[in-house]
Length: 263
Image (tube, rainbow, N blue to C red):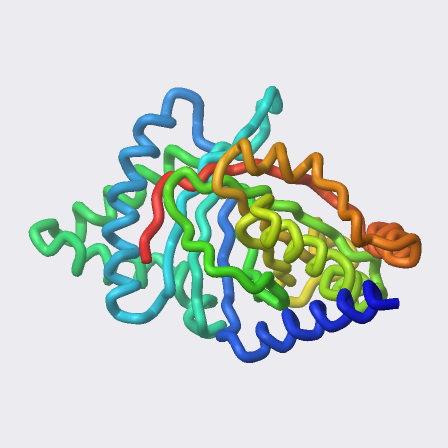
């Protein structure tokens, strides 16, 4: 009984903590780069970092990341992902407009003419395929003090909640899975976890409705985490885990390494 009480109390405190924290909005862009253009795109990331640095200075965004993806043998896999962090959903929707990027670019590179900046952005766009752009809102996260830095490892798990079962799925993540991740963090087997929901309306044909980010400081911590067995999990909680897993379809999982970040 004490275990049930402690698990329920932990879930309540974590959810209450998120209410007190500032809500975040994230734009994910999953990118494929043309064969032979990877070096060009990696050079472009330095240009983008300076551009988004201006957006951070103005307070329009909270930060920007570039992640390299572990693609395996899939030729259609994504090689990179970017994440732009916002505290304002309106700024999130406006922030991807080309004219907004040009404004930041002019501030970052005042010595360059607008035509040169436009050409630089166009050349980079020609080298890549922006396969997916997802507008997400964070609805739950662990209580931790981890600060992202280059080399941070994460898995992006895209989920599709069963239609009509959004509440059941999100409740399972908050009440069952979040406390498990919080215990992993306490055991130094994880650094951060968050649950994201799409911020735009979706229909039944949507590829995904939710995403979780599981964050680790390195591969050693990641593999140790995979072997973790939650000794506090009772049979009742295991049943809840199984029920929660049935409330969503895990579409795909990508491992990614943080290459560049702006804060």
